[in-house]
Image (cartoon, rainbow, N blue to C red):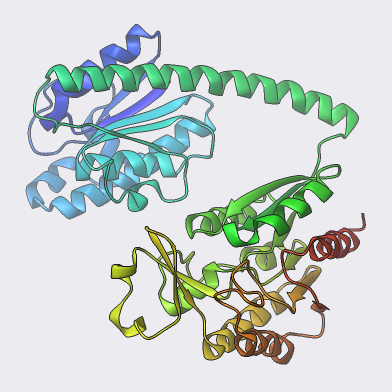
Length: 412
C-alpha cells in the first residue's frame, strides 16, 4: 500500500491525478485528507476527521480556531502516527506526498517516522532549496515540482507521471529486498554467518586512514562509513541508538569543531554520545579537528576574517581551529568518552589530524594540536585507554594500529 497524505481541499485535483498514475502501475493507494479549510475536492480513502482523530483533535474545532500553525502541527503528528501504525501492521510499501510548505511538512513528517529503505518520495515546490528540515536524516527523495500546484498542466502531469513511475520502481525493489532479507535471515539463523555491523566516520582529509581501516576489518565485519558533514554524524548517532550498530570507529570527529565554533557542518550537541548510551565499544580519534567548515569565502562571518582560512574549493572554506578551541574540544571528547560503560579508547595521531595538518601543509600548527592532546590527557577517566601514536593520521601504520586496537577491544 502507498500512503498518500495531502490537503484535498486545495490540491484535490492534483492528488486525484497522482492516485490515478499510481493505480496505473497496479499500486494500492491509501489517499488521506489532511485539509481543514473547505470541503475536499475529491473523495479520500481516509477522511479528515479520521485522520485528525489520530492526533487527538476534532477537525471541526481545529477549523473554527483557524490557526494554520496548530493545524499543521496536528497534521504532522497524525501523519507520523498513521505511517508508523501501517508499517508495524505490515501494510505499507511506500509514502508519497505533494505540496508547498504545509504539504511538504505534513508528508515528510510521515516519511521521517519510517525506517530506512521503505520508499519515500516528496514532490514539492521547495525541493530545490534548503530541504534539511524536511529530509532530516532519512532517505527521502525530494522531487522539484517545477510549477506550483494550481491545477494540472503539461509540466505537472509529466512530473507526477515520473514520480509515480519512480515510486513503482522503488516499491518493486523494496519488496524484492524484503523477500531476499527474509531468505537470508533463515540462512543466517541456521549458519550464524552474519557479520557484525560497525560504523566509521570519514572526511576527505581522513580518507586514506579510514579506507585502510575498512579494508583491514572487512573479513570479520561489515563497516558502514558516514561522511562527517553534520547529517552523517546525526545519522550514525541515530542508528546507534536504534541498536543497528555493534561497534564504532569514530575516526573523524570534526563535526564537534563545527558545533563548538559555529561552522556549517555541525551534527549537534549530542554528537559522540550514542555509543556510550548504548554501551557498545568505540575507538575514537581526532580526525579533522583542525578545521571548521564554512561556505564560499565571502560567507565566512566577519568575526573570523583574521583567522587562518583555506579555500578547499569554491563552495567550501576551511578555518583552522585555535589552541583555545582545541583545549575545549579535548575536554568535550574526554568527558563524552568517559561516560561510556563499554570498552572505549582514544587514538591520538601526534603528527597531525588531517591531510592539511602536517608539516609544510596549510594547517600545520603544533601548538594547537598539543592543546587538544593535553586536554584529553587532563580530563579523561581512568577506564578510557589513551593510545598515542607518533604518526600522522593518514600514515598506513596509524590505520594498522587502529585495526589492532579495535580488534583487541572486541576480542577478535
